[in-house]
Image (tube, rainbow, N blue to C red; front, side, top):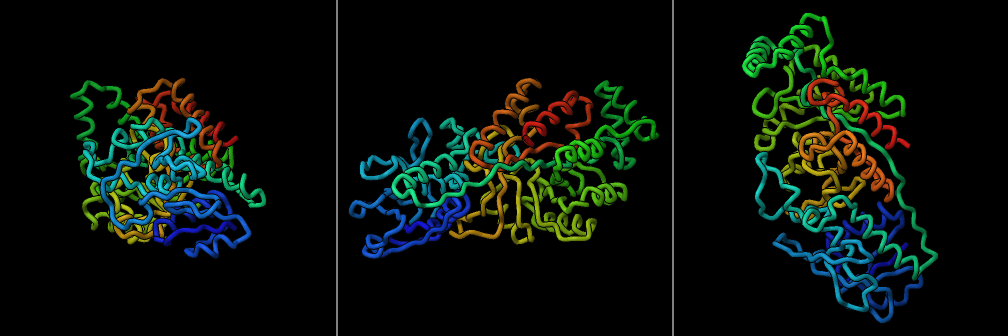
Length: 435
């Protein structure tokens, strides 16, 4: 155990200390606000305060964790041993040249996303506006690096302290935005689809649709057997996030009341790992979110407790409050659609801290590292470049004992249209991630 001296113990400090010491370093900690008790203590100890306490191990604290409001902040970017750091200090008595507690909290809480920013066309906070992108460290799990820096200075001073860092894990996840390309779409949508294909001179789509609907060929997006066999080869059980929303706008899965769709979902849920993929429109209409959750729960015959936002759209703190109130305990939306990397600086799951309420709520955040659409559509990478990116991101997560969470779609494996060749890319992802 390590004893931490601090002038007061606000909620923000309690929260980030638990994340650092319990979750990432596997060691216990306690606080004291009494200087004499701190100085007299004979075990590992650390002063986190504005000024040093005699000659004890000391980290200069910034104000962030002692505040209770959210306001514009410029945390500053510096470097320690070539690692980007936030909240730098020039105090020579401090064991580190930055405040690892405040820096970690700033990233994990997504403090900057509570401030006003321009959003993209889907209403999302853009990666380009983030301090990680501006500071060129989006592809680094910086919170883990900062915690390792803190652990190093503690273990050098107190070699007896036991540190147990977490082990690497791989969690594949699949989004089902379009369960089928042509099946279960009803007469009006099928007719409309044929008309659009004709107008765009895509006769191959018309022929493919006809073959699928007459049973001559399987639906190209029916890749579920491929996924099951591919994951079983590595003893993996992926999460499936299902868009269970009425048709409209950017939410255009198949007919959610179709019995074929229900049978598919029930089959996928044999491992109890089907989750909700809340529609883009549900972010502004809480009633729709309730209906989607209730509908999917009814089909599966159980309460749904895991989710991922459609288009990875998160609004702080509303999205996570709504999910928690709905009974969601785990969310897999923490990532950027446009870029791979670590939106919160984390490569492992952690509890959400609601800055507006200044308290943690019982919702665990599982950061997504890499998405297929990011590589294919946003970055327009070649297959070779995609594999190189996959290797790089997995190696980065593995180096800090993180959880590599991949995000792909059932249509990615269709070998149809723009996804030609992506089965091989995913097979390589599985092979390398499961090593």
